[in-house]
Image (cartoon, rainbow, N blue to C red; front, side):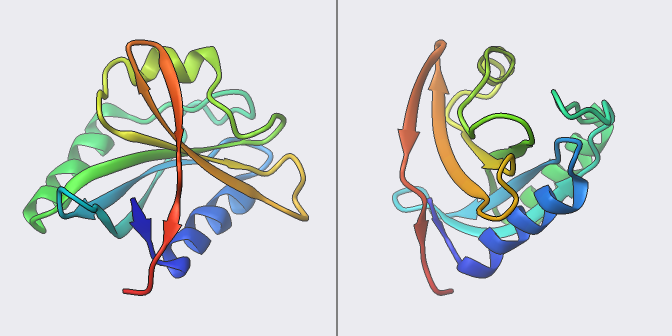
Length: 137
């Protein structure tokens, strides 16, 4: 996925703002061959927990409808890790089973001085890191 630095900054800002709890949201994309991030949609972590996130299914459905009405697709689900490195937990892997082909962006804010953003594809329980490429839109 290509993502503008300003959109990447919005993910980081969301993670910092919601700390010590995990943040969550989605990234919309356009284009199939080289997906380009078009928008970041914040969601509310209904778990309000530093260890996990949950999104109200109605809120997620509303966001996905908004993305599709704009002619875009769901490209990534993002959340933060506030106590650990930005690598998918077993909970993340289990949750990803419902979202094949969607990237999982994790913002690590355990070290608030230097947030780390990493992205993964999780298919059939297998985790593969994918490069986040910044692009000017």
